Amino acid sequence: MAPRQRENPVEHVDGFLEGLCVGKFVAVLLSNWNKEPVIGVIKELLEDEFKIHYWKGTYFGKWVPQNKIRSIEPWIDKLPKECIIIHSFDLTSDMKLQPTTRKHLKNKYALLKNNVNSENQ
Image (cartoon, rainbow, N blue to C red):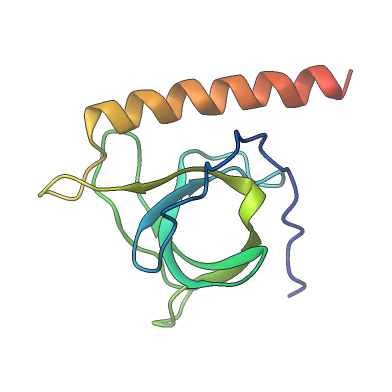
């Protein structure tokens, strides 16, 4: 299976990625994946990229680490740092998105999708 292209840079203000560190949650925007939100835990930081272990869940449901299909191997991917929407957030004690994180993500995904649609017209 060929690796999927991971492009769709998100515009950030200076210093947005300060504080980015291994073990923290990130939400990302992927140009070839229409489900949202896409979150995961940073496993490794490189100069312009990072390795993410994807988690699966929904805006209102519980989140659990995602494994590769029909495998117990974690689903880890290398992505450009530019695709990060937000970082360093926490889940609730019952592994759900915090209400403020959920609201921010919904607004951010909607805004970014509108920007992408405008550019494609």
